[in-house]
Length: 613
Ligand code: ADP
Image 1: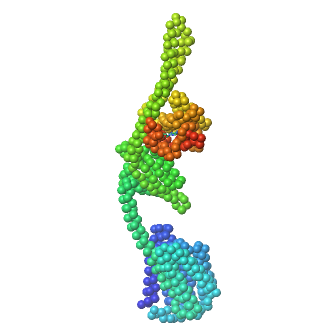
Image 2 (image 1 turned 135 degrees about the horizontal axis):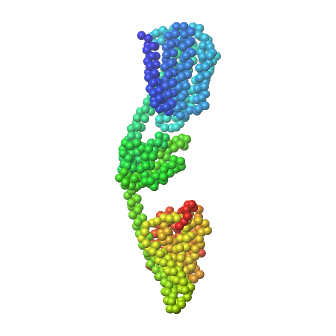
Image 3 (image 1 turned 90 degrees about the horizontal axis):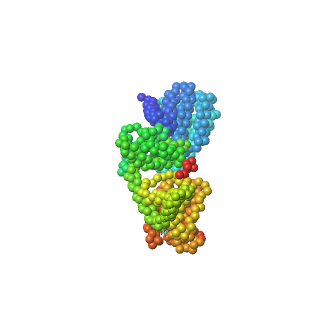
């Protein structure tokens, strides 16, 4: 039995198995280039093992020379494969060094096939037989060296420099894993390089009479790499288990928090979601999900908004946050709040959006009830304010009613005349109609403010609104000898809002201002309402020249029940703030430099294409 044949065949078949396994891994996951490079390298080692048997069993110098020629090709497979492995597995090597190492090795193969007998020998003159593993094998006897020998050494030297450089860079990364890889894989490659170069140099210089044995040290490299790759497989298994566990924990936590988790795969246009999410949106557990099916479930009024929010997350900053209604099969409506985050690949292309959804129907119900309470409170506050105004309003009503009475009496007198002046009577009737309309307008205004009603948003011109409120308080202002003026905005001052609620806010601010100037010198009894567009907002400022607000009270002005008035309730400003904030605006107060205070509210300006009512 030939030990050489047995051992070398075993090496070749073990390597074949490893090459096949790694090739399979690469074919399943085309991005695992390190596995492909490993397979290429191992194919080289198999070739080397076969060629080594060939040289040992060669019966003539010609046969020996032919085999050695092919050795350089399979050796190049091994070297290029190992370079590729280091490049992809370490991810730290210098590309130019890699290119140089590959280039020199390929050049060596070309020289090997085009000059002399092979890269190292120009001619083999004779063979010798030596005893190796209990049998007689052929080794080099006499030969003529090739002038290209240094090229082989240079290629190996650059290969070694690349491997050492990549290993040191990997070591410097500092983690235990990278240091172990650098030592095991990098160390085995360096050891192989030193051993091979040493042995080949000794044999071709005639200092050692033995067969070329490169496949054995190479096997050490194969084993070192296999060790690292199998550790990766073990780690992947562990990671898979950890992932499964963490997924279970996440689902448990999400379920406990009543959260539905979803992932939208933008590449495959699919949605994956937990059972809880499916239940929230009325999907069965096995129903395939996609974006259009999801949008179909939404309330028609919310569909477009959600579609836009999704598109904005993908095209914009990646954040998706929205609330929508879902119409269930039984016709019931459910409110859902959803938050997500888009993920992008290395080139900035969106690949998926991951998020959570939660049922907020109860919160929405509570919000509705709260709004209802606010509306009732606002109504109550209006009634109180109108109570304050009632005497002046009664006075305002008395005027037209008195005029009507006087005109009626005059008409009666005219009618006692046998031939009454019809022109005069017509004029009296016109006056009566005018006064009646004036009184009707006062009553209408009062009625609209006293009515218990739902909030109705429409497009409003704040200039007009301010004019209406000023004419409403005019009788009271006249009675208190306060001058209320309007500085209207010259350009657009349209906002979306509830007319009565915004009138209430302005009325409250003007009444407070009139209270503040109470008792001031006649020339300081002045209240100014100023409407001014400021960018995307419209600002309304109510300034007075009254006593101002003490600094320590300024911060508490909008707190409920904060009042400095003997008969005040302290709800006017908090209600005004609630109203303005529910309109998407803000309120603030400050003292004027020359005395008195100014209270501001700002509202978002409405689009210009609409006409204000
Ligand atoms: P009330 O008018 O019932 O006191 P408000 O909430 O409308 O309730 O006002 C709260 C307090 O804010 C007032 O009591 C007053 O002290 C202060 N305040 C409001 N407007 C002015 C103003 N223009 N000048 C000075 N103080 C003011």
